[in-house]
Figure 1 (cartoon, rainbow, N blue to C red):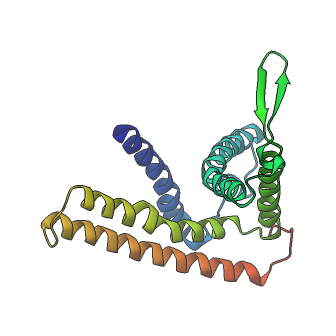
Figure 2: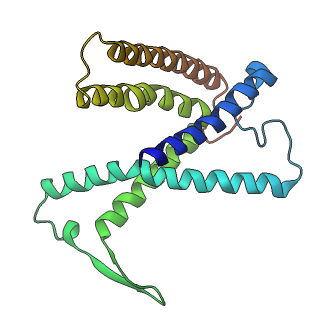
Length: 204
């Protein structure tokens, strides 16, 4: 698992750094949020389509992974709140040809569909995808990716306070906090700029 995580994070970091660093080096502040179509470049169409399909596959999978804790939290809360509800407990088996039967909960079907529709509606009302993504990434990066893993590692390894390992881990954590704060400031500035020409359901 450690090796797989290292390879996955390293590969992802390499691609994001290539897009971010080379894009900024080449275009400065005029670097587009979407490298596929941000230059007015639409030829050849099949290449752009393949790139968009790859992005869609990546985001659909990521959306499912990130939504599972929210789904589970609401479903557990609803079961605790209404333990005798037949609607929450009901499961029906849906049979598909050549695939067998699948248990389907009407509550999960309604709740998860409603959640997806609402998030899609919010995304269409506020079409600032890159800036919102940047803000969410900036806010979540330091605590989830740096602070908690570093603290858990030091607690598990029983790292002594003010030892070289403790010092460097905290220096790393602080440096990443500074990067996160700067990224959040940049994302907020981008949102403020976008709001000046904002119209609902319109992409500028």
